[in-house]
Length: 365
Image (cartoon, rainbow, N blue to C red; front, side, top):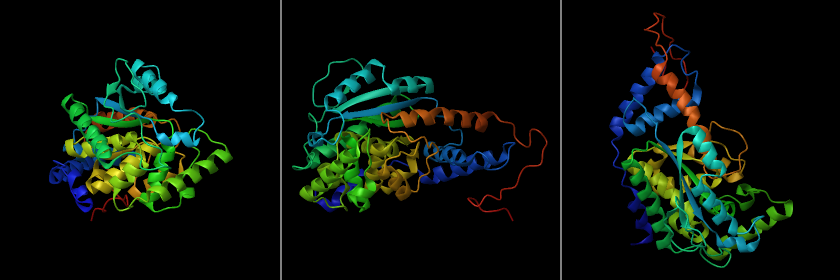
């Protein structure tokens, strides 16, 4: 397959957009009938309308939710771009499987299942509940050469797509994306710099916590990795394989799988947002199934949200990862759906309905 042909591989949407438009129109009409000021739940109303389009039904249902956490190690940790070493990836992945990490507790409160996936941890783990989809034992050091081969990157993407298929068959209706991999804010910033064609300084933050000197080192390392690998910014798979990680690739597959199987997929933080950007570059229609959760304090995340035209509803300066931002969004959407499905309508209470003068929608004439 030639480089210029690879993007066609990810275009299998299985999506009836005509039905989606009708479902969104019906959803908007129902919102307007509810006994409250029109558009008064703001972006949340837009999210429910978007989900109606994804599900091809105004009867929106996201009762069964999961957070899929892609766990992988990154060779760039050897360049001292993090506070901790790669051993922490395996420890935290085990905690996911045991149900004792932050995301487990938050997901439990949100009524969601946590699904941890070993897609590239640098050691073998024998723990119940951890899904073994290992591509290899971590990625290469990107300052020395590519993180992975193109085939490995594509295999990781296909892994994410296959997981969405499995979850669809099990009845899941919404998926949150999460990750665990020491060093992955370095890889994600590198990928973002190239894909957005922005300077490394503008897209790189302190990750889980770096000193001024540590941030400066991280920026130098990313610049060196880009210079060594010279990825083509017009080829997302090449950028991913040379500078990224298996966690990013796996989450890219989750977004593409959401498009293929008609499931809304939620962005978490910066690493997840980079995966979303890659997925949209591979297939622009993917944007139609992506839901943002929070605005990460990492610069790359802010730039990517602007690039994708997405508006996160949570502004908490989160930097935990693991899919915790998606878990925070879930109960908010559940509350909004209570209003959508069960609130009185103007007709039911014999009150004249509001007219729409919201600039997002055409005014009535």
